[in-house]
Length: 89
Length: 141
Length: 115
Image (cartoon, rainbow over all chains, first blue to last red):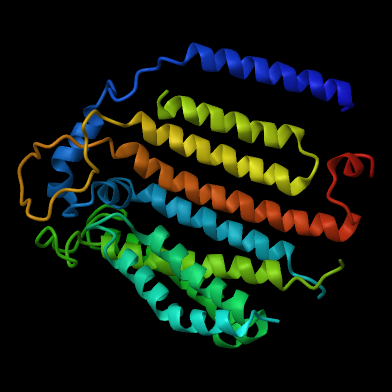
């Protein structure tokens, strides 16, 4: 795109972000509202999994399937990098 | 084409401590902040530090590309194998079948220590393989 | 002026980097900055007043803990987001090496005239 169109686009983005910033200047901080799942994980985490690190009890105990898929994503990324940077055969 | 002699001496003295810190982060993943991903990246960074200060040819004689690739595949296959082993023993996929133990010790939490070790090996080998592939590209430039 | 507003500012800085810079590597740096701002936003949503880190003490044996902990659920979600950010940066850098090998330039204006 040309230089003038890029400048207009840039000014529109800055204006939208500034309006969003001004509208959210007094957002509520430090007071989350619905904590049902969190209270269950805090109260029952040690009894169900046996780990005192609650974050590890969530991502290795209750939601271990997501961690498996994430390791597969990292494995596919390493395979992609090795495929692109193979060099001369 | 490594770095100067001061950097080579300091890296040679520091390398076991960085690997030890990475192993501490992996093995205490269920007791304090840390875990498989964090410890694996620390160990991968130690290998990258060796490659930056000694040159890529000398580092590849010690940490070969084929061996790191086999370690990475071993890590991800151990994770999947543990999941299916849990189905064969009657629980759900990736469920816990080991005894829970006393909270606060290393041998607690059931399968979480084995998960952390498998993820740590996989992430350390993955980061090192990415670095080797980016540095050793000898195609058309 | 809480961390939620600051994460919006950092997101704007990353977006400026992706839009207005001509070099390809600076665009990828803008992507990484935007990823970092989203991680900061999610973690600062789960903050509770006078809360501690979500790690129980060494001597707890059972029962319901009485101290106030911050929310551990967004922290567990952001671990996955950080790993995905690494994957995106690694693949983008591999593509940039191949682009430079073929076209001998990394300027986006000259690359868009190539076809």
